[in-house]
Image (cartoon, rainbow, N blue to C red; front, side, top):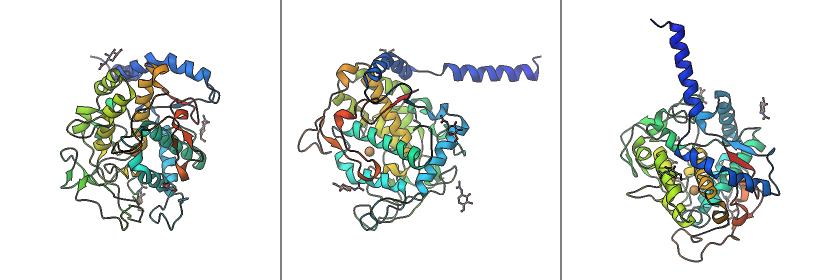
Length: 369
Ligand SMILES: *[C@@H]1O[C@H](CO)[C@@H](O)[C@H](O)[C@H]1NC(C)=O
Ligand SMILES: *[C@@H]1O[C@H](CO)[C@@H](O)[C@H](O)[C@H]1NC(C)=O
Ligand SMILES: *[C@@H]1O[C@H](CO)[C@@H](O)[C@H](O)[C@H]1NC(C)=O
Ligand SMILES: *[C@@H]1O[C@H](CO)[C@@H](O)[C@H](O)[C@H]1NC(C)=O
Ligand SMILES: [Cu+2]
């Protein structure tokens, strides 16, 4: 008979073993591209190895690290807005400023040439605000969709514990527009963000019953309501598995194919839409207002990591490249690398897209673990 101690030791070893060898096809691709990223870093005029910040997967953070991040996000959600109140009456908090900036530019940053660089800068600007305005000294964590694709609801990101980004919504009768109804649909009831108030939008809600209508058609009016989610594995177990991410990276031979494949949203889903609609609800499922759910930034950090891994497979030919137009419907002019990205109230500087393509040039100095 094995003793209790032996069994405990065996379990502990198993846990350590699993932790030590966690890796997959996507991290293999990261490893393959790493030397090219190191070379790029060595050439950087602004970023050095000692300044480099490392973004990690939520599941790899300690409880203390997760709590530090959560504390900083709660600080942003309770600090006052810096926007002009008469123009954006619904923006009450500093957190809302980011939502307003995203709403304001939605039609010119999705399905466009600047989609990847705009969201990279936006996610970085948020990380900067956490650090510079809320005393956070960690980095923006990411949500590796593939790691939790079988059951996102029980992942450490969404398990509803006090070290999660809060859990699913309360189970109510509802319809989610992009997937069969899951076990939620109502207000979130657990975790650090259960009291969070969503102020802006909705503009294009993807859940029924719909959230209350915003007093202004542009969504900038004040419309306080709870955060709703309908997390399920329906999309994640079909479209955001590790093999889906690896296939996206392997099979996209140019940036047009890469950005278009990840943004698919219809009968087939790319990882971008797949991630957003895995959370679903309000405002995560709202094309305009999605940054109003704090899990947005973990999702977009993973979009950014996936882009970085794709770039790193052939860095010389995948850095200074752009495809797509300046507006979502594809009408009008083609985007160029000298187009500027302006985040107004949430980032001090305007950068050219060409300055936002490398994670160790322009404003950036970070990498992924
Ligand atoms: C919205 O965009 C306009 C320029 O088109 C800009 O002047 C304004 O400051 C932006 N508002 C926000 C909240 O970013
Ligand atoms: C981050 O802040 C915590 C708490 O203030 C401190 O204990 C820790 O040493 C800091 N870490 C770094 C890398 O500065
Ligand atoms: C939510 O608000 C209630 C009532 O104000 C409070 O008791 C509770 O601690 C808050 N929970 C969180 C996670 O902030
Ligand atoms: C992607 O490519 C890598 C190496 O080039 C290979 O090991 C992996 O099996 C491929 N994965 C998929 C899903 O195509
Ligand atoms: Cu967006």
